[in-house]
Length: 158
Length: 284
Ligand SMILES: Cc1cc2nc3c(=O)[nH]c(=O)nc-3n(C[C@H](O)[C@H](O)[C@H](O)COP(=O)(O)OP(=O)(O)OC[C@H]3O[C@@H](n4cnc5c(N)ncnc54)[C@H](O)[C@@H]3O)c2cc1C
Ligand code: FES
Ligand code: FES
Image (tube, rainbow over all chains, first blue to last red; front, top):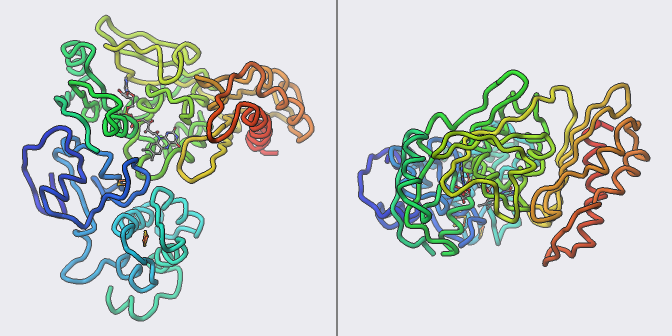
């Protein structure tokens, strides 16, 4: 499979979950596990361009597929605009939900570049945050979609 | 937790998948999107010897027009059903149900056939399929057979599928121009309904000419609210008339009692949600 632009070939046990492959084989520990029930969304990555919960996919199912994780977003040392918007809008506290939240937020904008607040909340339905109350997360997605005034700092870092 | 060990096969044709299923005997499990199966395997509630992945069989994917019906391939992902124009035009109640099924990530993986074959009484696709008289096309070692929705759902998590059979596609008679709505009652986001109601109605000049109403989680299988359907025909699409018809929504149901609510509460919900679903479907 291809992960964050690099190609990997491995033999794995069929029962290995994609999230464990990413973390334990490839050392991509940016993608985290937050639950046992596929509810929290912390493990969200993109598979062939669409968001999935990597704790609910077998690594063998992804044979030949293309995966993007939170670690593959920044280009040339610059944060992805969504990462910058989360930073700028204070869209995280403990940060545990953040990798999955950012990956899903990017998926929301891929589907609909100018979502309403309600559409953003619906798009993030599968991602739980125990800290922020979601408000600043929604603001960050609005900022990244160019619908709210983007603070200067975002423009500089993006 | 991670699943117990199993052998994994990923056939690229239906024939090879049926052969793999026959070879493996009764200790095989099919994996479609894995969104229900993987949680079960991870909790070790099931530990098959062989897992057969349908994900590489292209012929099971997609929606096609077949004259007076549309045909949804079993491996069509929820997200693709949601945006499919044929489904929207001819089976709008399915679009409405998929819209509120799970969350975007699960909809990107989970499949139409997988959700129906799983037969969770709280699953969101059974009631719409039943209400629309869907037919289930099933392939097995002795060829293909078609099962009516009425006969497909047998019990909790139990369908008419035999262990050596694969659901290949679902035929849904076209109902262009019908109004539809899926009214789902949940307590938390992206979860299975406590009760939900699928309604499809044909309204002409303000009068309901035909009506289909399916109930989710009001028994061990999806159910048709036939008394409501009959009471609606010929009625004006008004709050008063629909309210009267919806009063019999819980007739003949056997809802569960659990932490989300007892059976009486569900019976009450069924009448309220039926009224809302029918009114929304009728555009009233
Ligand atoms: C967090 C979360 C929330 C969810 N919320 C909802 C919800 O609100 N409403 C809802 O309805 N569902 C919900 N689901 C379940 C989701 O709809 C699943 O996609 C669906 O139930 C199973 O589809 P699948 O393709 O993933 O099937 P799998 O999990 O791969 O398979 C499910 C079962 O069906 C069998 N099977 C699959 N395909 C076939 C076939 N073609 N022929 C024969 N047998 C087959 C498998 O052997 C297995 O026993 C949720 C799931 C998760 C993880
Ligand atoms: S770890 Fe995957 S959804 Fe929680
Ligand atoms: S910032 Fe702590 S869980 Fe979201």
